[in-house]
View 1 (cartoon, rainbow, N blue to C red):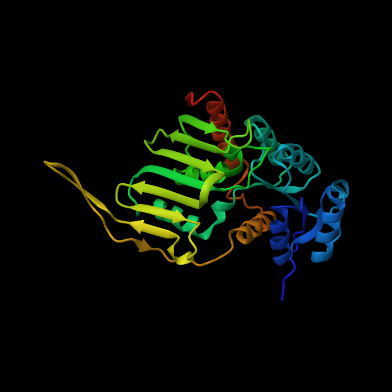
View 2 (cartoon, one colour):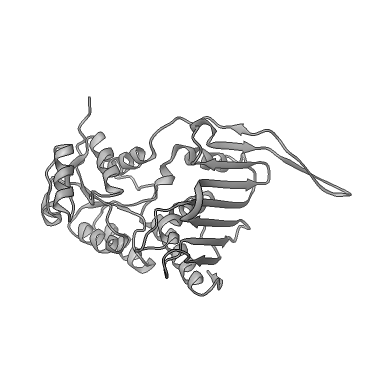
Length: 332
């Protein structure tokens, strides 16, 4: 039996990704209304989940609705988030929070002035396996961090309104920043290329350097023969791999305790067998939606709050500028 939440959420945007948010907010008993510019889509969603299809204006004026979840095109995120916060609504907005850091900073300031929750949809921060990996890092199981690299690649879905850097990389940048303790990089470089649609990069690579000495790189592509989602973390004591594209859940988080002995003949590595870390299987999006509701109910700051969104956006902004300048380094 589904338990109804006292916190009521309106889902704004019911399309490609919005339909997944709809399902999860409905399953946790928090869905109150749906909004979509396509009346056919809105009507279908309303009938499926037995909630009213409303205009955004009516949602913002409805005092029974505590928050809105935004899954609309990226260029609309900042303006719609600002409207909702100004109307007294808590906001969960899919990445990116805005298209430039100054807009995101203004939204965070608005949320604080109005005493509201602003949460950004960096989904992988709620993935049980990433949380387990983060815990390994925090507890020092991997030792001192050396470098992190992430590959997020597949064949499509090709987009024309945003490039692969903005479509794929926010998730990986968010994870990298979390693993280094929210430290921001001192140097960002990036390259990209457009092979399918002129002017829209379908391949990119971003390199990050941190004051702590950690290096990281994030590679994204829509022009890859198969789906690859792999985050690798190299430490002084062990290495860990989070491979979300593996079919077997129980093999998605692996530790390698390889050793390297320095001899008079040079470094000699000794490979160790992989250790699979068991993690309870849960749907990341369900946990993310529940986290938003819990933050509203209890006044908690979200794991991916506005400040986290701003940090990710700063890196994206520098990477985009570096990519457009053919790999010029962006410092600070």
